[in-house]
Image 1 (spheres, rainbow, N blue to C red):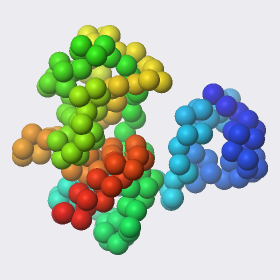
Image 2 (image 1 turned 90 degrees about the vertical axis):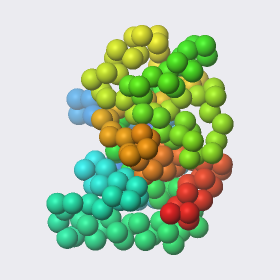
Image 3 (image 1 turned 90 degrees about the horizontal axis):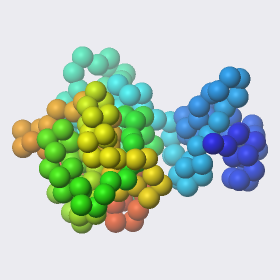
Image 4 (image 1 turned 180 degrees about the vertical axis):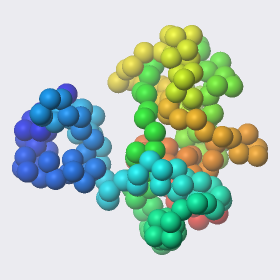
Length: 214
């Protein structure tokens, strides 16, 4: 973990600017006592283009991108989501926008599994495949698994497959209860968000293609 001063020095910006980015939700930080600390992984993250949506609005936007109209929302919040959907459609680079807006949707664990266990994990009914592991992504993911798991089941899953946190992760588990769609797959909005988070050229291009095909 880095102090705000260390993070500022590594990024070549002022301490005041770091505090501003934390307030705006553009840098993830944790408060320990009276001080903020920042995980080193934030150094590798592209600066978000805008503030994230609240978790509730993020999930409403996920489902809107999946073809499900938001219900029981105030008019202002509903308008905001439709405006953001239009912004994505008009953008030549929608992935960074999407990653910025939906970054608070669910915690994610970066884990490592024995390669021999990946196929079983991919077929485990407790894991709803998404991101690179969803067939709509069109990306080879034989050596990786990504999906959503009920937080109450995550510890059991981690224990059974001997998953450990690691920088060389090959398993990404997003902690959230998610209802599969009529075809038994993750909502398309989650696939888009997960691909956008990776920020790679192939994933970003696939986000653009999937949005244009809707």
